[in-house]
Image 1: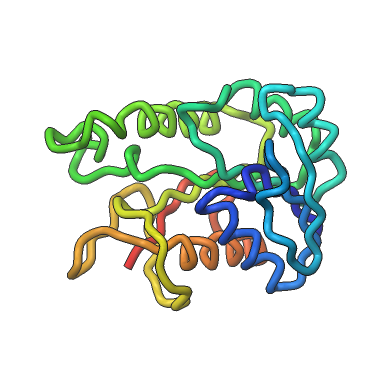
Image 2: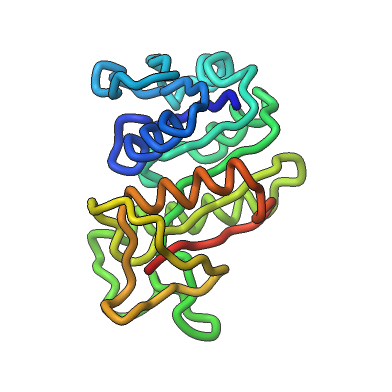
Length: 202
């Protein structure tokens, strides 16, 4: 499968890149600074500015799947979505955030009293991005939200999937970047959440 990965040098993006490479996919790894992108089998690195809609469209055109792993607070969501639509991939997958997940009836994680103020711009950016996708009539999109703690760890391949509710296990709500990448790659290879948000956690 030919996959364009935007944000391939970040914490989540770099793990997704390795997982997709290990599975034998052909990946165009896109970042503002491509020198930070790992050299892996099947990977071609490319520089692109996500704020240059035309340039980004050209970079991701011709791919079966586009994945974006970007900070929402630093992303022009309408412009990014416009670029993806113009490129016309079969599917668009987004590394989401946990802030929009529900922790109770009508209560999102970002709305809870203890949610750190420092993380609110990013969380609310993720909320807005998901709202845009849900109102988008053309894209075949999937938004994968991590658990509350999204951290470096191990690739175990053992995790749970959920819908719009925050997953909480015996040790809280968490998922490693590595296992998140497994869940995302699984969804690419065997679509089960078209035009949906889902979540992954232990």
